[in-house]
Amino acid sequence: MKKIEHIGIAVKNLEKSNLLFEKLFGVPAYKQEEVASESVKTSFFMNGSNKIELLEATNPESPIAKFLEKKGEGIHHIAFDVEDILSEIERLKAEGFIVLNETPKKGADNKLVAFLHPKSTNGVLIELCQEIK
Image (cartoon, rainbow, N blue to C red):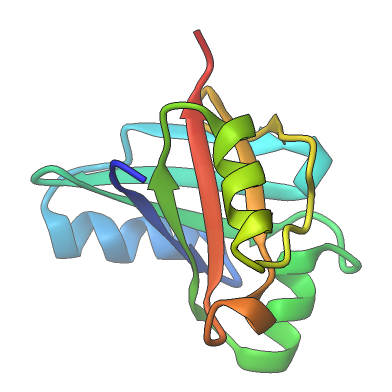
């Protein structure tokens, strides 16, 4: 894992949250997109070298909708940039981590992604991200 790629924050209303984070950081989101496979709409903000992803559910049965229902708005996951997502998945499985999707899938912001179950990471959902080349 090379660095924190971004911090994901679950929000109920992306439009209202975009306005809040624009005021907070003093800049608008640099990117917005929908990820149909995850049933989310996302916005990305830069704050110095740090990236924040806001996530709004587009389906009441999606993981983000269920998270919001249980925990409310707040930090949903921490994503780490990796060089080779397949070898990193294998390494982490061998270390005893529970991998939620052993085959990476296309995520937001031109990334391949895979997740580690919070049960194996002290309650934190971890996302692995590799830039799609």
